[in-house]
Length: 448
Ligand code: NDP
Image 1 (tube, rainbow, N blue to C red):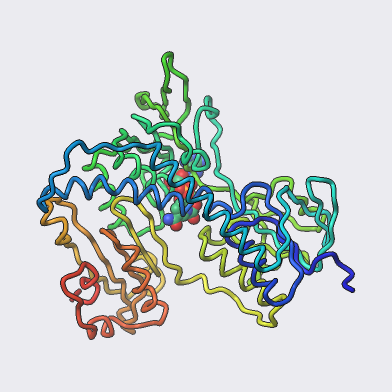
Image 2 (image 1 turned 90 degrees about the horizontal axis):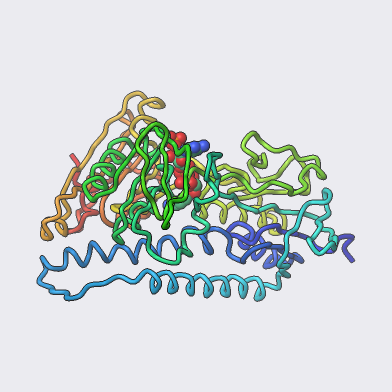
């Protein structure tokens, strides 16, 4: 008989928490997970997955526009927001059911209520019940930051954007990171007038500069307006509906929806970490070691709540590694140096490894190869947008240090190319690979 109620108690049934629960249970551990909202977490319920569906839905605008050049006549083209929204929300329900079944099939007990830490081995549930566990895993994710300005109660975040009653005519988006650029693309494609306001003049900070410039050019040509160096200072309700947004000293902008996308803060408020002697980091994150262990030996944390890399596949790997280490006899660390990422803007950006600037700082002697091309699909459709691929190469060893791409389907192409970067392949290996013609991806092996 164990001295604890559970071998593992997981707080938060998102990507990291569900993976850790399932794997720990498969190793024979007695596992429970508590979730105060919906099983699946941000990615499945109000993040990556429903966002990608909106990207797919909105992308038809481009396809249908281009279709005429390929001989199609489409009469009475109309878009209905409610149909897309409800289809997306139905699929989210389906996925939540699938995630719940995964827990059930692995005999993971789930509590649909908030849980907090009551001690090194103790969890308190909102119902008042207290349970004990040999190990506790915190996987509570992060929450959108709402900056402090007059009228911010009228603004929405990515949590609410999936539920809009109708397609807004005018959308103002604050921020120029992942969420801002993805939703700017979605609403612009669906026909809304989109204005992006940001506190700096940098979009997608951290991505390769040439790609960011290209995205800016293309999206401006598509009608997205940018206002830089002017974070929102006030939002007022207008008589007769809508809002007036004041971006610093710039002219007010009318809006029907004001979406704030200024980063996400770890979900640690009121979690009771102090009861286990765990101090938070400066951004509210839980500090952990390379095995995701907190300052308390029996408590681990994975995913966005640790603010290492706020990406679903990373949280999943971290959760899996914790479960394997605690119950599968296999202790391992996660490699954070070569994580591919994508922005599902329109067109999308995808990237892995070092940017040109980072590589020059770290290696000094760097060669950059690029291909600035008009995809065949665009040529045919008289669309003037160009793709841009870049290879960043260590000039001393010929090793590929980074790949950066903007253009149709770039995330789909980059995932495979990321294997080559991870494996330490050289530019000569790319050159030796025969092109797959005609494709956009062939540009990767044709840069000289
Ligand atoms: P990001 O960190 O990507 O971008 C934040 C933006 O808000 C930046 O433009 C930043 O400006 C600005 N900003 C930050 N703080 C303030 C502030 N206090 N006032 C005004 N502006 C501010 O955050 P997102 O919210 O877009 O996304 C959150 C996280 O979610 C991302 O980091 C990412 O990890 C994840 N995500 C990933 C996706 C993907 O993989 N495709 C998709 C969506 C989200 P500046 O740069 O000038 O500082």
